[in-house]
Image (cartoon, rainbow, N blue to C red):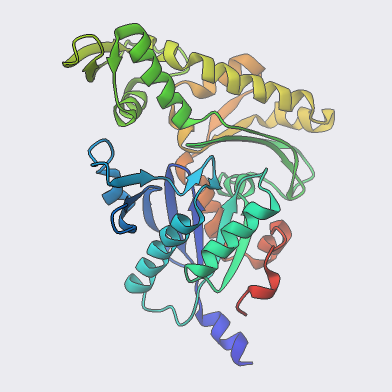
Length: 351
């Protein structure tokens, strides 16, 4: 009786643990935290100096004794201890700002499709060590589909492409499950690397990843634009060693990222080629939906639509689709039970 009473008082928390950004929502309140997935560590005393936005300000400006690292690489935990402290930072922040928590919160976390049992256990252990009472794991792509309002429960096919920071997930969903899918380690950060390499190879200019990301967001495109866009590119001249600025156009940036875009499109085609024909017919009728921060790249929907000859649309506010889906699951226990992944630590969960 008392367990049931206190379980109603304990809030559920949704966490979209991304390679680039971590977004947190609370039951009945929605999104409360949205910060970069980055941690600054002081190697002299082996302590975390800053997390999120404060750590991001240090990129490219840190001395040798401060290491900047991402707890996740391609959506997978790369450093267990750092991830634990990273999650603890956010859960502690929630406790400080929301005094209505009466116990350890239940946490719903999205994980990649190709996650192993060991990696699942790492996510659960890190979350529980950070202060969670119970951890629910769901596939990120399912949460993104719910956030994009796709009819995942219907006996018909829906195709969704989640373009994240470290990975691109391509999936065909039907009857509350993933029928066919593919994970590709080409996403936002790879496009940034493409721009860095392009600047080095074509202009003898060394630029930082932060500059490359800014250029990508401002004038990056996957399809020819109606009007030419230009922006400054600042860095260090590799010949003289001195600072230099050049002006680059959207055409040059499109050329820089074209190989990666074509690779993503090839993987989309391969998923369609191995999808049952009945579901392909549904996808042709309904179209493909793009989610994730990478969906904001100008013309990405047009480039995919032209290549696969299927209508493509970008979901509303694509970057928050996954957390919106997780937030919906916080209030819909039956649906959560339907798509929930088996726990690797059932005996450790706090009831």
